[in-house]
Length: 417
Image (cartoon, rainbow, N blue to C red; front, top):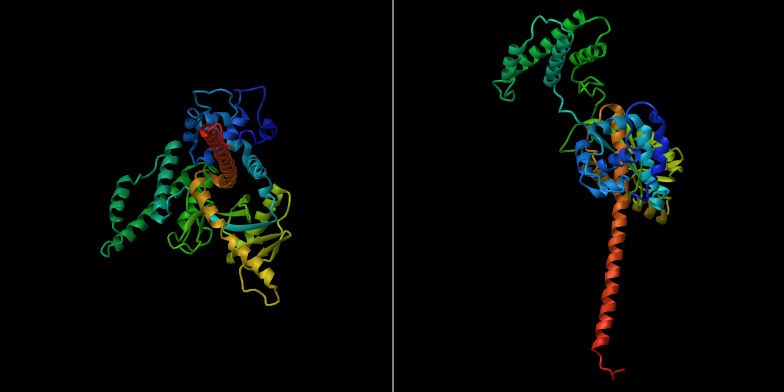
């Protein structure tokens, strides 16, 4: 794969992001791009991929090194800065290259589309957790600004945490609910005290967020589920083992037969599946340069028949006027659509889509495209590996036949015909 990827396009696209005259010399662009690829192909963290690079000669050859280098390629934090530097457009360029490297397999005019959820790296949100985090952040802000609070509530919160234990026991339920209300009251007091004592405009965004968390109720819309990731959505996909997932919705577009991922986009809001078709197909057409003729989807996309020139087929009883041949073709298309489900499962389990550790909406968009690009690259690695082993097996067969022929001829008598 090191010889198949067009590394020159990354140098030309990212060279304007660096200053040639001032500051410390930059790391080679090919090395940084390859580290991002290897991270998701091998399902590693920033720290692990940097550490393994210094021990793995295959990683180093893939990154453009001509001899073994027994040291770290960069600090793990430099990968964070590099992702921010190239942004979503740079990651999309890597995704586009992963589609190109699959050759004719990515040129099919039929595709399958489905949505899933990439969960954010947050704990399961509860009111008590949110209110205690608000208290902790208010105390931290007061310490940074050298403000003296009327009360720190340290001992009070410790007593309340004991009352909140074993809340499911019938005798402790009322006591736990009363402690919950007390914690919320303390959080509101600290937020209002900070508003009075802080200069106007300072920490305004954080205080507005705190007020929204304290005022939201059970059945409100657009609730806040995390203080450090306020854009997180609560999404229910009907799974029995996981009723609610907290993250963002993702739309995946693959070719029908070969399974190459030709579209992977993050949806910021919890939209109805049919409403995600337009941005998903717009990205697919932008990356591949052509429009799909047909796309097969599940019943979650009901209500849409055509988007951006692509005919959308949803499972439903066939029209009596439809020919038997066409019914069989559509039936095979719907059967083939099911193949996208295990691919999404592999994206989550093998390519870091199950839990997103990148920050913000930009991090959501980046993680989706990097996971899809890694799966496309790994697909070609597996194909080349199978071709190489098939070549070795065929070569072994030929050598065995030659040795067998020589051995038989050596044992024949000289007078034999």
